[in-house]
Length: 113
Image (cartoon, rainbow, N blue to C red):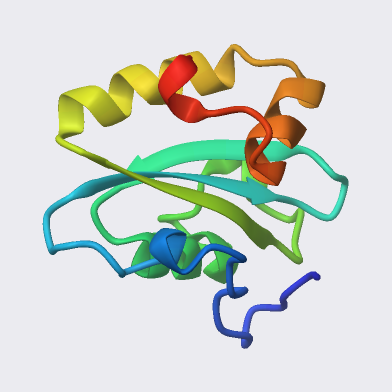
């Protein structure tokens, strides 16, 4: 399901992975799919705010997502501390498309990365 700039964040299948469900200040990794089907991976303490910044297509939007909307928030993993989130981000960015699809589908456990 795609979203446009005025839509809210797409609900995730697993309520424990719902954006903003964690404690304030906890770091989360998120995956966004653009209209071309490519994935963008990032980390933040506020997934909803960050996703809206990407949707706005402005100065706070990741360069690789500009002009490639509509965007879909595909997956969120609450990691905890910043260091762990950044390490996981590097590992996820190194995954191929098939592995990222498995991560989103839940058949690949992020703890095994």
